[in-house]
Amino acid sequence: MVLGERQGPAEALCFSPLLPDVGLIKPVLETAADDLDRALALNVVGAAAAARAVLPAMRTAGRGTLLFVTGGAVVHPNPDRAASAIVGSAGHAYAALLSQALTDTLMHVAHLVVPSHDIGSSRSGWRA
Image (tube, rainbow, N blue to C red; front, side, top):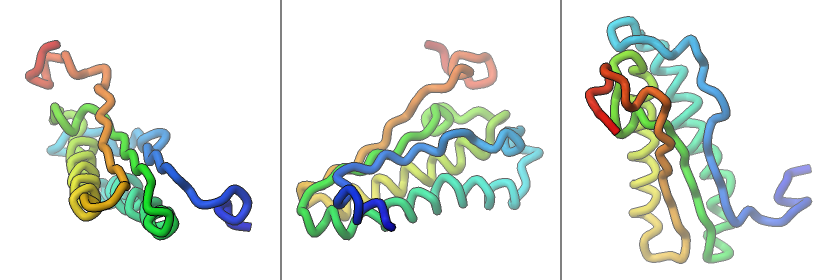
């Protein structure tokens, strides 16, 4: 049984991959195309699949909220966490495009950035 059949159509979606694949956390010079492919599959393709699963019912209802959560590498890229910055930026772009496409509706799209513990590190170039 599909969840929507048991509990009704979704009114909100929060997409935030639980844990990153720690094997993907590596410096930019060690990040391979396959690493980015795997990270994009989880963070961007996964977000698109989740959104596509709930958007039809939300659009029919004329309302809904889509919230996409990423880490601080989107705002402050760290060369030691290349995949996080790259796929986070792609996820941000996806959320922005959805928001633009739904501007004339009562649907809301937001992107929340949760700063990581290394934001204030000397490698990030940013200080709190």
